[in-house]
Each structure stands twice: as structure tokens, then as C-alpha cells.
Image (cartoon, rainbow, N blue to C red):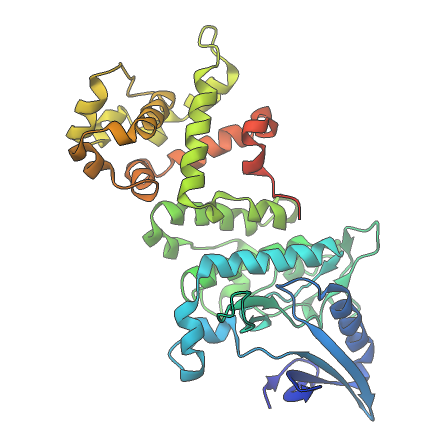
Length: 405
């Protein structure tokens, strides 16, 4: 016996043509639910982050479905990582990579017009399938499509079910529009809300943005959330806060879709972030200063909150001395801070050793030198470009779009 699900579902370990599988036994009374689950699994199992479906057969009062057998769920490795059977997976667990995989699996379901409606840690399984190089490669898999809702081809939303909207999903992981039981149409954004809760849970080792189990639903209804658990991550934490805040927006239509989540800077490597800031600086430098280009005005709007009264004051003496030898910079301007960053990146190899030591190695140390001192800089610049036509220019397009499969 592996576990239990809703509606009297039992999960056993079994074997199919020599392969170890999980066998899900569903009650025939819920056979419409079950056959929908089967057809959804058949339709969606060609994605590496969606559970594999192998076989089904009916027997007396039950329907049996053979699925990929997984050694653990996300809940297991977050909540009980010290258990012997989860130890190796927990040691190899990379939260950001896991979240990218889960989001990618959900993007696949949404592209098939499927709304999962029950995204939660227990429904994210970990596969121990081998990587191409033969090493164990843990993959996150979205599972349990019992509540999954298929949208018609031209439909982007669905009405709450005959069971009542309250029946959909799991307490504490349901979007406010489900909890309100409004006769409004529910969309893929109900999954984005649950995914936002899951992001926070994964990054904070099991915390929930809406508090403990018994107050969550009330807090979700009132939009009382706390993301303080991400502060310890510094700049990366501020990017996580930005993304999760948007995912948990009480207004369903304001939440990002899965593609917007995946291209968010939260998922970027340091080298990509640094290249972006350099590209941004190059772009702003060629703009007209008199009269001032509207994009330059946008860049400097709210500059005090980003760089303070004079950004020179946040940089150390060796850096300032090296900077001042060559050109003048206005300490109130974000554009000039970006230019300083760009110039030092460009001439990094020629810098004196004491300046290099102060800045740190490329790219992580160098980027961190600036983002630690100006934690709002990156998201501010990313937002200015993202809100303008510049985002569709060849220089920036790849930063705001997913590469095509």
C-alpha cells in the first residue's frame, strides 16, 4: 500500500511488464471522474514534469490505473527530509530547479486547456528516473488529476461544479474566488494562486504565506499574507517576493500566466542578470538627454528609493577612488550607476587587484556587490524596460520571452 486519495481512492505498488508502477484503485461510483482522469493523463503524459500513465482496466466496482511509481512527494522531502527513504532526494533537492519544473509541467497542462484545481505539495511527486548520463536525476511531476477540469477549445474559464465550488481543491490551497463560491467563471489562474502558495512553501521549507492551517482560508479571503520568510535570501528573496505577490493577487485576472512566471528574473542565473543590466545601460546611454527621452524619465522616476540621495555613499572607498579617475558620475541618477557598473564589468580584467577583491569574482560576486547595496535596482530596471516598447526590441526580447520548444 502506497497511500490514499480522495473519493475512496487507494494507491498500491504493483508491477506492469516488469516495471514497478503505482496502481491507483478508484471506485466505480466516481467512474466519470476516473475516466476523465485517465483521458487527461493520456493526453498529457508526454511532458517530463507530468506523471506518466501506463495502463487501465476495470474490475467489479473498481477502476485500476497504472502510473509511474515515485519514491516521494514534495511534502515528504520538505516536511520529513531526515527520514531514511527521503534522505538522498532531500540532499539533492534544488528548490529553484524544482519550482521551474513544476511550473513547466503546469504550463503544459494549461496549454492543453486543463485546469488542475488541486495543486498542493502532496500532489507534486518526485521521480527518480535516471538522467541521460545515468546518474539519478530527480524530476518533479504534477499528479492527481482527479479534480482536473478540461476547458472546451474556445473556452478560457469554467463555472464552479455541481458539487459546489467548495468541493474543488484542498483547504488552504484554494484561490479566493473559489472560497467565495461566486457563480463567476474560474480560470487557469486558480492554479497560479495555489502555485504561488507552493513557491513560498518550497522556498521556506514548509511555511505558508497565509499562516497556519486553521487560519489560512480566512486570511486568503481577507488577502492577509506574510512573505517575510523570504527576506533571508537577500536580493533573490526580493525577486521571489515580487513573483509570489503577483501570483497571489486577489484579482484572478491580475495573476501572471505560467509563461510569465517562467521568464521572471527569479529564475535567472547571475550571468544573465548581469548581462541584462549591461544591455540596459547600453540602451539608456544612446537615448536623447535634451529633451529627455520618456524612457530615461521612467528610469529616474523613484530613483531615491532605488539609489538613495547619492549612490556613491553606498560604495566602498577603493571602488569610488578607481571610479573617479576616469569620468564624472551623478550620484542621484540610476543611469549613472548603471554606467559605472557597465564600465567596471567591461574593464574588469584591467582593474587593480584590490578593486577586484572588493568587487568579488565574475559574475556572482560582481553582481552581488551592487545588488546587496541596491536591492531594488534590478527589478526597477527590469520593470522600466518591461513596461516599454523596448521589451520587444531584439536586444531585450529573449529576456521577456520563453524560447520556443
